[in-house]
Image 1 (cartoon, rainbow, N blue to C red):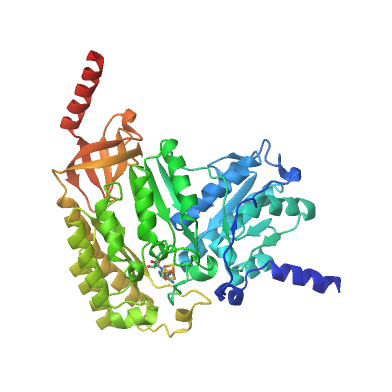
Image 2: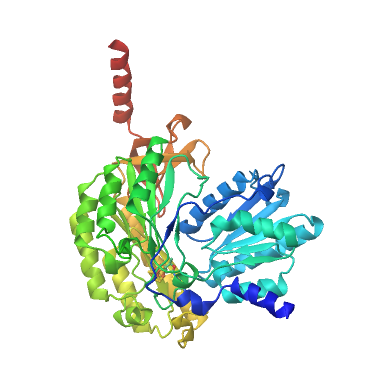
Length: 502
Ligand code: 5AD
Ligand code: SF4
């Protein structure tokens, strides 16, 4: 009897594909006082170090900032060396199989470490934790691990650690329900100049290849007041740039029952805070309105950078993908954005090759679309079947070699236009937020233009954290070189001289 009760409790806290797929009409609650640290674990991290490895998208990067802050609230100190850590968390991604393999590869290395250091605590977080088959595998083959928690209950980490301290057994605590909006969580941001700001969680689009609606749950928008106040706070702290984050940001607000407030309203209100730069990712072409384009054009501090995933250039494949637009309607939107925002805007995309049933003709249409759009850059992927999604049940009749060849051909076109777009910028003066020392040369600084072009600049470290005018001197496929614009430097000197005089 006790055995069955225990099994029931464990099953309740395990992810479940059927539950994860459900979308009920239940109201989404905003919970403000849920994050607490029980007394038993207040000092758990004293003299202990934690290591966190993040896989996947920006949403995960920001989740890791929250997890880090929670651990530091329990007095853990961060280390970048996992072999030196007392607690390791892998914040995982489930979007493609290679993300899975990387995590299991890392777990293999950590297992050896755990054998040498039995007190080491190891936890799994993120999207893979929300997958039924992954958690079954952990329970059956990775019993040496200490805890598993999901994307809906990050704020419960202190309690999960408390439970684990009591039982000293693998603690699995993953929820598959639709989730609420949790406010008041701490965050240890990686950058002092750029910040991620969640505006919504989950996704209801259910593109047939995508695991996200299952791992991240129902679409839940944060209240505009909470977002604006977070941005104002960041601005006061000296942040120069915010990126509004969501799986499908253009659908922001569609889940509000008591107000008519959409992405265009939020963009405008965030722009009005006066923060230097506002970005947003990711857009679904379906929800991109004309008003949104007008707002982007109207406010100088909304970056002229649009990430507009197309996924395929074949309307037949787009239909199978459940994308809700055709090649023609995508191109219409694309042209509208280009016309309204002008050539100074940059547009990037995501493309999947080798979707089940993709013929050569379908693929040729993707190539044609890439030629037509001349994207500034693109993330290109080979289709990866995800268990539980409708596409995983479709016959995957494109061979691995064929998929690889298609990816190669597509990348050639993408690279050609990326370089062409960069070449056009040589000689121009662009505003760059210099963030850190360049990876390629320690005498250079690196930063991004508002159009999301990476620029390496020969400049003194005193410019880190500043938006400076940079004259572009050279273009590569994925980055630009530049030098601080002399006129800008002279102007600054003149202003200083003028201040001295008065
Ligand atoms: N296989 C390959 N690529 C995928 N993406 C999402 N799901 C899959 C999958 N199953 C890509 C899409 C999406 C990006 C974040 O990842 O292009 O826009
Ligand atoms: Fe996945 Fe994006 Fe489609 Fe949502 S809109 S299901 S996150 S690809």
